[in-house]
Image 1: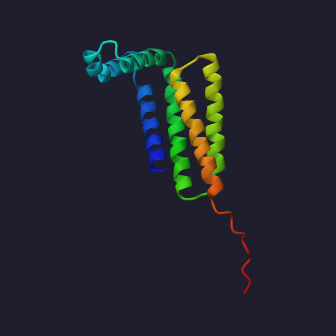
Image 2 (image 1 turned 90 degrees about the vertical axis):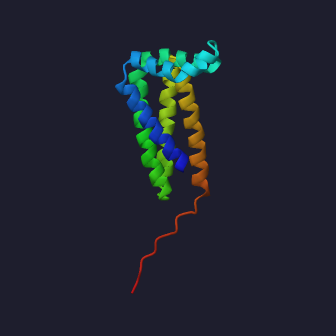
Image 3 (image 1 turned 135 degrees about the horizontal axis):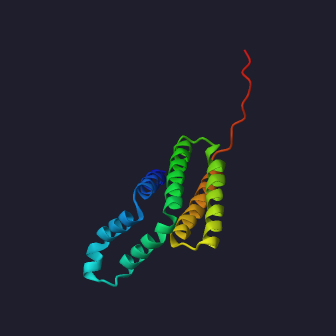
Length: 148
């Protein structure tokens, strides 16, 4: 549960950064973070992937920022509800993340993106985990009227 909460907070934080940084600034941050890797090996696969992702993300930076912020905040709310064992949160979480996955799949079909593939795959895994967790919950105890 803690990992899901941290993931939601990180997604929201990264989304805010994407919304606040210009595409040029975003590429500068990526170059700064990858500088050691690039010095060691200018053709490093990891650095190349990050640089390409930064360049392609500039085209969809606002979309990615809004997606990550909303995704992260919703995840935080749902994780808090699941942590409190609120049964309603499980099907709502499956529906919400399923909706994200469907929309992201649509976006992938229009504009293929490694970023969206990763987010969508993670969503599908989270949906599977939540659904499994929901099936292991104890069934509702029937409420009985209290008679004096």
